[in-house]
Length: 165
Image 1 (tube, helix red, strand yellow):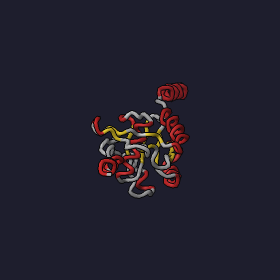
Image 2: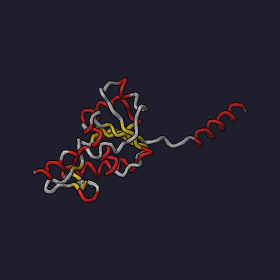
Image 3: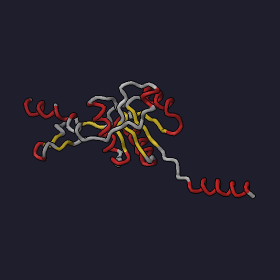
């Protein structure tokens, strides 16, 4: 009788277990993605965005000076398939980590990914790997929120060139 009660308790606990959360990690390069995937294992879907996914248009200034320097970003033509894949993966993930390089460009790429993929900032974190070692990758819980501070980095230098030149 004790054995039967034990089985029932275990079955009840299994029924109440929550769904395992799916976690997506997006890095800039496929080489880094492969290494990070090796360290994180099957609990994480790790993919590469292959660098920038959008830019200011090349044929015009791309910044509306009259509207508080509002940028006019365009998705890069050669990244359409990557963006489509990332959108699908992000839509199916419970949590997304954006792991760009630890510099202004990496921050900008992470911000653009969050914006283009329509990520919920509450379920998205920015990772910075200063080195890709097992120890640093497994500290994935040390993350920070996405910021908009790098929003201006891409067009900060472009405005003076168009105005002066």
